[in-house]
Image 1 (cartoon, helix red, strand yellow):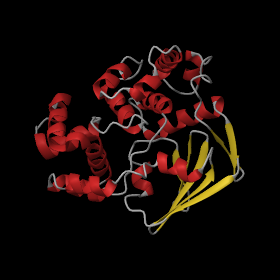
Image 2 (cartoon, helix red, strand yellow):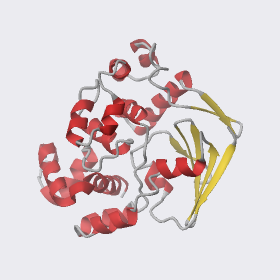
Image 3 (cartoon, rainbow, N blue to C red):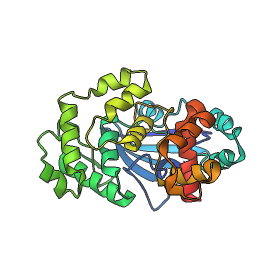
Image 4 (tube, rainbow, N blue to C red):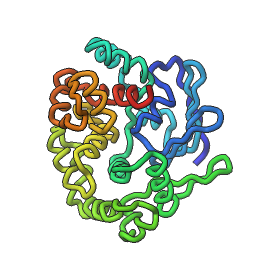
Length: 288
């Protein structure tokens, strides 16, 4: 594969830090010049922003314009979405302004499942470390600009990986869950192709919840951040519980705020855009 380059002119709603540091992905890293380099699919890509110009450069498996358009969700009108959300109330408007450059990536479903199982009760540096070691040991090597990168291993490449092998990568208590989920998917106990074709989000969520290591929050992250692309979910972690309580519920004891209460308010206020609202609120609360 040869290096390709694609330049996107006059692009609004595209900020590198907002996209890559909002908690949706784990294989993008900031370079010294402020650009980000990441691996997805069989692609190694560097993304740089100069004013309103976005420069994509790297080794990609196919046409770079098509790959970038799909992965970065460039055909979706985020300006329209932000305008709609900003009308809800002043707090949502503030969160949208703070994270105005967020775009939800179209990440491979298999990789998203495994990555978010690894993310459970974990911190970002450790999550990234486990995923990098997993990819280096079992993925395919790609060399670009004198540096070696590794693709995320396919389910077939993890077929013979044992619980102990996962443990040796530093996966901790997730080792058994990674092993079991890999084999559930290999055996088609959960058919990823069928999940893409199922229109009912609740049916897809219930199916994801049968996977080892996938609880409600992880299931919602998979639904939102993968190629399943469901915006009618509202992943709830400590930051989201905090911001929803501070803005709308106002319980003196934040720990007593339950998930159903948050989900009810999210659906009433944000409707079919609740997943996007969650990202703006999460990023705003955590970073600001």
